[in-house]
Length: 197
Image (cartoon, rainbow, N blue to C red):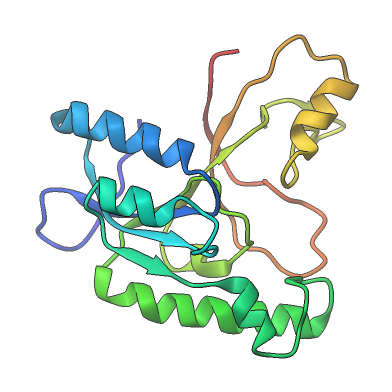
């Protein structure tokens, strides 16, 4: 187990939970915390979503009594005349960095010690501000030719595992690394652990 070091005199590290969808990873974490708070060194300071209308963030924030920050990334891109949320070109990357800056401002009052990416879709360099953990749907300890073969966004890790006829799947928890446009290596952060098969 690793420990997050923080400067305040609080008893617990303050975490931001980031989610875009149903929040099943967040529910599991928050339920474990609620059932056995003494076993955990962290507490949720805020829940964050980029999809306020379609994610479960509002429901979960109310259920677990956690403040909510909504930062609709699609609406943000539309405000710049973009129909699609993308970082495929320079303008998309510029907008993503502006969106990240607006998210950074919304999170500042919560004094975050670390983040948990619990199914958060958009790549964001908010990970430069504090350590962020990511639950990844592939076993990132498996490599071929020095590359993690189950890295990638969305369904790619599962599809690759099926194509390689892997008998079972594992999830990984990694420390998220900042990214740059056009970078070929994704999910390159240190692996903290993998799940059971």
